[in-house]
Length: 438
Ligand code: FDA
Ligand code: NAP
Image (cartoon, helix red, strand yellow):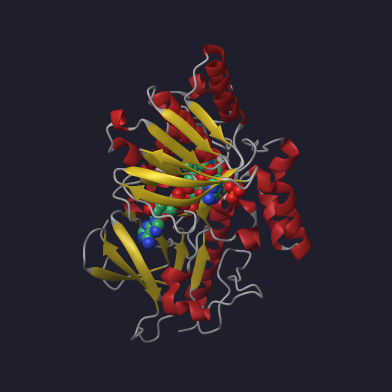
């Protein structure tokens, strides 16, 4: 997509994963703030084409959210962008219903996202990395305030500036490695897993290990065990064993859109209670089917009296070193404080993610963004950063709002509703701009 020189978009979206895809759809379906003048929007995505955690599209992995919590249904149950519309369009509606599941495979959900993207993709520039946002040096006289978004073609050197009255930052989670551990060609984070794995001759992978006890770790451990029948596979598990992701009905209410209000308008004690009681709906936990699949593999080995799947429980990684062609990992036992080392052909850190943090993109603009007593960004209910009166452009966040809006911040559960709320807020601001006296 080309962007017209000097145009000031009503909103520029940074990143085009499911969150901003859902926002593009919400804008598409929204009425115009001024008759005949729809909201103008452009999105910039650094990947060459649409992709949702492609490096974790492992066989047999399923969604952790009901298909009804798609890009649009909870905002607009008759949306043409729903998962049901996708099934209808592909001729699989009846077959899907016959599977009697709420949880499609991640492969199928990816196909759904690509199908939905094809309806709004004309607004997106791929291969376009956003480097930062700033106020213009010489703003156009008489114009309401706008910001400039600096964009660089991926792999290129040249940058261009795109003008926007509002931005929606949605750059996603940030892979986390333990302190002091660097990635290399045989030390991977789960977010790069399939790409790295495909670059290696599987015959060279005779001893592999996976660090962590979350969903990513369990899925990769199962994949490596099934894909490398000749390999010793170690799971470095900090707990005594994998724990269950609680998705039972009462606990699952923390992902309802009403819970956002309860969290946002609650007290510090309210928010602390959400985390204390319900962290186990999402973090460091694993779905029941994957836990059972791994346990069954271990049990089958007992029956056969063979052993190549090793669970090193109560164990954390303290150090990683390269010794010739091998990766040597130092392990600390939480059972007896003992230390041991393991030499490996590949080591995967499924050690989770940090939240999205907009400061890097905001640069100097960040000084106009207010913070709470703990130094975290203050965020309005409509997901706009709270700013000083000098910055009137809206900086919306899709992600990075766990401290203000709760557990759904980084998840799909509430994206349809959240995008609708952001679209409503944008449309409202556009109509205020349009009715402001010149
Ligand atoms: P996402 O990370 O998807 O997209 C951000 C986009 O921004 C990326 O495409 C990135 O390339 C782009 N970008 C980053 N920086 C940029 C820049 N400077 N310029 C331009 N583009 C930039 N949740 C859930 O509710 N149910 C589920 O089943 C799952 N499953 C799941 C599987 C796996 C393997 C992971 C790691 C996570 C999940 N999640 C999940 C949680 C996950 O956060 C969620 O599914 C979505 O990816 C959130 O969508 P976003 O668009 O916010 O981020
Ligand atoms: P996670 O849930 O944050 O788990 C990270 C794990 O790494 C934790 O068990 C953590 O233990 C462990 N860890 C961290 N440092 C360690 C160290 N030095 N040594 C040993 N262990 C260490 O991350 P995730 O599994 O990647 O999940 C992230 C999100 O993606 C979740 O929302 C999840 O549901 C989602 N996801 C979904 C799917 C799917 O839809 N099928 C697949 C994968 C992921 P501590 O808790 O002790 O720190």
